[in-house]
Image (cartoon, rainbow, N blue to C red):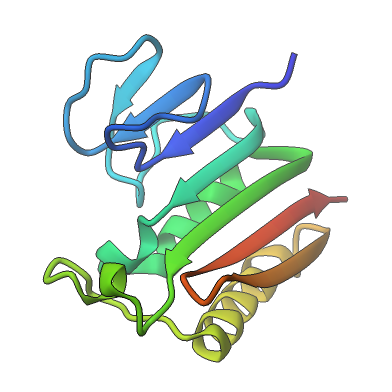
Amino acid sequence: MKLSLDVGCGEFPKGIVNCDQRRFHYPFFAMADAQFLPFRENTFSEVFSFHLVEHVEKPERVLSELLRVTKVNGVIEIRVPAKLTSKAKGHQHRWRFDYDFFLNFFKKHMIMDLSTTGRFSVTFERRFCMEIICKVRKAY
């Protein structure tokens, strides 16, 4: 069975296990800060983080935690709103990502985190100029 985690699930959880810093009443819910996830290493086959990293002070810390809890051959999918969309202009956003900044920022931190632990593959894509998607497959 594939065990999936949705970090920053908000009102629309996608994982079997869901996590947010606000309290929601879902089955298999953990209230936690995305920068300090309360799960063991190599636990989840799929990890989702949609429209979360633009809100946190240290997105590289969130990325490190997502990598830590993902199993070998697991997949991480991170989505952020594109810089010029109305979703990216929220007052709670600490970061505004355009495609190149997102790509360079996350590649830099992924390489730092994974270079000592194994191989990985990364893909980036734009979705209708509305959001930017990063998919990471963790491998050894």
